[in-house]
Length: 118
Image (cartoon, rainbow, N blue to C red; front, side, top):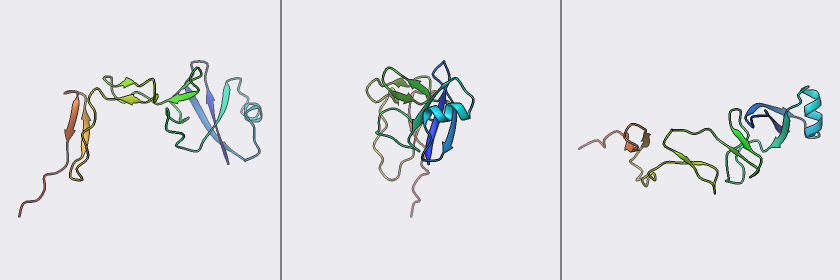
């Protein structure tokens, strides 16, 4: 199976379809009766740079990557990874931590339940 996304003139991904292995970008454009750009994408994942072609993501044609949605207003786009980075690095996981970003305090908060006492 192949996966194709439809990219609007605004570079937003607006549709994703699954086709047979022999389908082409030109063929899917004709089938879907759309003049927008269609691009074949991996099912998920990728090479670790940028996001994947999911509906709502943005296509960056200059860098040939998809950019996911910004998770929080304070997070900035990293121009090397094309992913959003928090203003404070996430603390190391201790196995007993559940780090959650708190936009109100602009920091990570450990929301793990306290360890039981004996």
